[in-house]
Length: 172
Image (cartoon, rainbow, N blue to C red):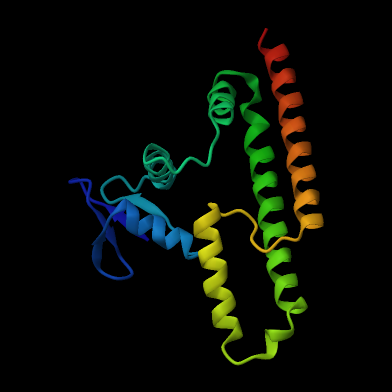
């Protein structure tokens, strides 16, 4: 748990030291769950800080969210669609995570070097490198897998466009 003091400094209660947004981003990237709580009021500030981390990454040119997606997110706050959007986004990200995990599992089982000493460490390093270089895109996917994922992404985009059209009709 991370506590925010009145001075806005963030204190990691697990390690008994102060942390930055970059530290918190690193915790999340390593798979840790993070909760940020205001020391005085006890309010959960996690969402606020996660949005700040995303804004910082986007402002540094690490663009993951296209302008049209950001625009649609803003629109979802001003329409009746805000009740549908969180579930849709959560399911979409879950599908992407599941697909990436499956590709990485298949990569290990198809490789004849998988029994070589140190292969797991080398594979983990390769995965980390590929994630860093592709911004989290699925590494090691074969053309048929990539085509399948592209088709799934296109389907998600189409569904999002349909959802947007329905939302704009509701807003009128």
